[in-house]
Length: 303
Image 1 (cartoon, rainbow, N blue to C red):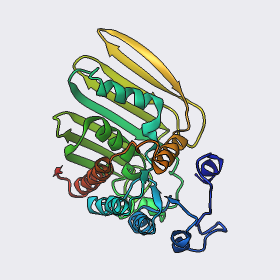
Image 2 (cartoon, rainbow, N blue to C red):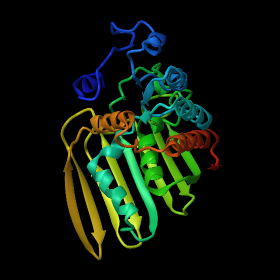
Image 3 (cartoon, rainbow, N blue to C red):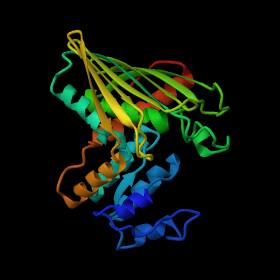
Image 4 (cartoon, rainbow, N blue to C red):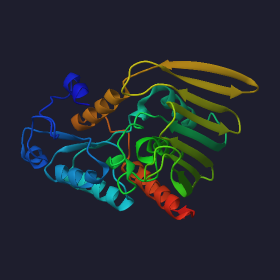
């Protein structure tokens, strides 16, 4: 992230606060520095609310790594603090900016699917499989419902962006191989206020895999994506089925992280609105909280 910021024409990297980096001694020092216009948070999930609110109260624009927080109430406090302070709140859902997903969103917006029937979504990888078992990402208090905070949260962001609010969820987790307290598999069924249904899964110990499949009464469209924002290379493939025929379009890797940062900078400069609404940011965390509750209790949670 720091390298991307340093190379970005709309940002001047003022400094870094991290235990292993010489820079600001405390987070409070960043908030107190009048030369700092914005902060970007890549801290553990349980610190997001306190740091976001403190930065907003200091008049700093805030870009927070996903998830924005861990409960709906906390997300509402973060969004409210940013709104009250008149600062821009950005969120690290860079996958929205990938061309294949932008194309599917346009198709949904244009009504190309007819009636949307169902969505199947999966996002898995093993990039974190080597973490020690005492890492904060292995603990349900900080990273609930297995891979939801790292991967599944992107899928719910896609769905809320394209299809609106979720009405209910039912989730289950499993610990198959890693021995993490939070689990290494999560599977979720969702029902949307619009009536459509969806399923998602996120697995923390399997090779990289992304699939997003929208089924409509007129067509279906599937994105298979072997790219990762941190690693240039790979492609996303969009397959569309209509009238018995199939078309395939391939999209090369793009730096979606930079695209998201550019949108954040443009919103700060007032040249374009940030493409995530406050409701979308809050509702995604409400859905995350509901999934975590369902996985813990074994019941259906209505939002």
